[in-house]
Image 1: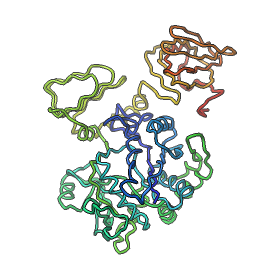
Image 2: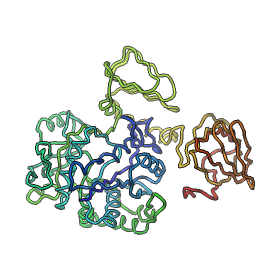
Image 3: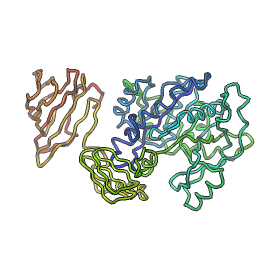
Image 4: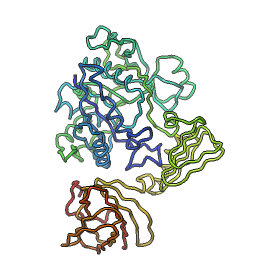
Length: 497
C-alpha cells in the first residue's frame, strides 16, 4: 500500500513571534534539534517499510504558500530525500482546499494511494509510536474510512479542540498486516464528535472521562475517498480546486495552481468542511479516531516550546549568549546580543536583531495580539526578519537613513541575482568575501575581496557568485526611493517577474 505523506505548510505561527514571521513562519525554524519542524515532518515516516512490509512511504508532497516556495524547496533539498512537486497556493484558503489540491494531484499520479495529511509545524518525539498509529490508520483508510489521530491528553488544556471517541472499531489482531507486538498497536474508535476549545472546568472533566482526545489536525484517507466526500459535501470547493489544478502548470520544482480559479474557492478547515459531517455514524462509521501517545506538541506558543525542550536543573532553557542568575522555569533565547536574566521565574525572553519579546509563560498565547497590533500600525516587524532570504541567498539590513541604506548580501555558490535595473537608486558594492562576477551595462568583470564597483541609476546590472564559497558584499544604496519594489527584472533564473 502506498502511503503518500501530504505536508501542509501554509501557516505563519504568529504566537512564536519574534522568531516566526509572516515570510519566515515557524515550520521553517529549528527550535528542537538540528532539523526544522518542516524537515522533521518530512522525515517522520522514514523506515515505515521496516515496521510494516506491506506499506510503502512515498516521497512527501508539500503544499505551501507561494511566498515561501524557495525557502521550502531549499529545506527539502537539505534533507537529501526524494520529493514530489511542491504544490503552490497563490493565496491561503485554509486546510480543506489544500488537502483537496493534494488529493487531485495524488489521485492523478498514484490512484489508490492513502494520503497522510500532516501540518508542517508539529513536533512528535516518539516516531516509532507514530508509525505504529499510521500503520493502524492505513488499514482503516483502505476500507474507505477517514481517519484522524487524537492525542492522549496529558493535562486539562484549554488551548486545544477535543475529539470524543466512541466504541472501538473491530480489533485488527486478525489482520495479516498486523505487527506481532499487538499490545503496542493503538485501537481505532468511531469518531463521535469534535468539540471546541473548553474552559478549564470542562477540560478537567474531559480528561477525567478518558473518552476525549486532543485534536491533532492529522488525517489519513484514500485520495479517492476524500474527493468523493468533497463532491457530496463541498461541491463548490471541489469545483474551484479542480479548475485551479487543471489550469495550473509545472515550474521547476513546483506545480502552480491557477490563481483566479483558486481565489474563487471557499475557505474552510478539514474539520468544518468534512470531518464534523462524518460523525455520529456508529453502525457503518465513515470516520475513525486513533489515540496517539507519541510526545506530540503543536508548538503553538512559547510555553509549549518550553514544555518539550530539554531543561537544565533550574527548569530553564537557554539558547544563545545567555546568562541566567537566580532564574527558574524560563525560556531565554538570544540571537545577536548578550541576554542576562536575574531573579525571574516563568518568563519567556526572546531577542532577535530587530525585536525583543518578554512575556510571562502563562500569557504566551497573547503574543498573537502583539502581532495584530504591529499590523494595525503598519509596521514591518511581523513580516520578515532583518535577514531576508531569497532563492539565491539572503540580505540583511545593517543601517539606513534619509536617502541611504546599507545591506550585507550573501550569494550562494553558483547562484545569481536577476539582471535588473532601478529607477530611483544607485548602488555601491564592496566585496568582503569570495569572488563576484558583475554585469554592469555592457561590461562583465570579476571582483575579489576589498574591490568595489558603482552601479548608477538606470543601468542594467547583475551579481553572480562563480565560486565554490559563499560570496558576501556590502551594498550601499542611495537615492530618493529605496523600496524593494524598485526593481525591473529583465532575466531571472527563478522565474520572478
